[in-house]
Amino acid sequence: MRPQLSQRGRLMPASPIRKLMPLADEARQRGLRVYHLNIGQPDLPTPAALRSRLAGVPEVVAYTPSGGTAEFLGALQRYYRRLALPLELNELIATTGGSEAVLFAVLATCNDGDEILVVEPFYTNYIAFATMAGVRLVPVASRGEDGFHLPPLAAFERALSPRTRAVMLCNPNNPTGTVYTRAEIEAIGAFCRERGLFLISDEVYREFVYDGREATSALSLPGLEEHVILVDSLSKRFSACGLRLGCLATRNRDVYQAALRMAQGRLSPPGLAQLAALGIDELGADYYAGVVREYQARRDVLFAGLSEIPGLFLRKPEGAFYFVARLPIRDGEDFARFLLSEFSQDGATVMVAPAQGFYASPELGADEVRIAYVLEKRDLEASVRILAAAIPAYRAARGLDAMAPAPAPSAPAADFHRPVV
Image (cartoon, rainbow, N blue to C red):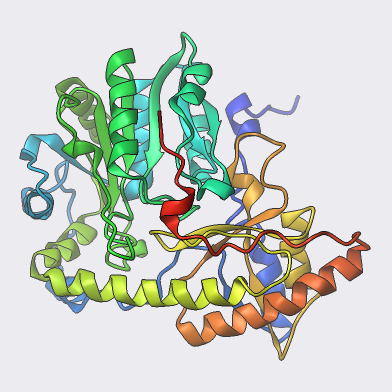
């Protein structure tokens, strides 16, 4: 008799970001250049202040404390203090990437069958973490026409059930590039406080905010000390995805102790990564400002170019380095496959991430893609030219009926914010 997979194993989804990589590999084997707009892998150099620390690798690369080394936790504490987010060392846990921080937060707050409210579209790997934990994600839909800002609180009320344990937000948002206003974060915080829910706040992209905006940390909200669990990562901020180092921060003692016991169960976070990360103390405000200037310039190049494509709809991203665009297509995955397998221009093509995998509602996102602006401006300009040619070619190849162009996304952000009331 053949052994059977668990239900969890059967339900585990493939990543919409990575599952088409074999097609990209085949395209390269055919001699094509592939512009990767599908994945949030920054191309900026990892700061020398981090890389140089690896020259001091100890003779024995040993286990580190389960919650992180005192030196790394101290560096994290100083980083958050500069953001006016005071934390004690015993309110911080080093994790293997931000992914483990999210998983610890879910496991510490939910039992099998419990529910977490999440604004969709959302970071697709939340589905994977919830599946691992036996937790159900309950979507609360946002709209592109509103810049994917939070829907009214009535939508969160309707999504509540006796099994709801938490709300999970990503701010600035992956995949939409939305930066929630302070009023939005305060409203969700009050909602969680009044209903006894945890607020899991993914703030990996907090520095990536444009046009003078600021990202409000859930940890800054008074009266929510027992509710907020912050999850964070060094991956994007320092262009160091391969370090696989993040953290969980909470002032809730029970959550901290539960997460620490989970950390003990997996022994220790990456020791060499913690050694490298000590270099963050050497990075001042000029480093962060330079990164923001570069990504804002990339955003502007891509937004201006894509806005000229007939039938394509998007709002100008406010932060992170992603956005979700609606295309005159019917199947984002089929379009992504077409780009890699059937289309090229001047020896190159583009890889995008089908957006349907960023939704829990199966009827949403089929005509959307997520695009990451993590390439230099010249490559983004080339990508725009390819997409401008690929969309009509795809429509012709698939025999699609003519669709009216979407409204021009020219309104400033303030014109389409829908307040949370």
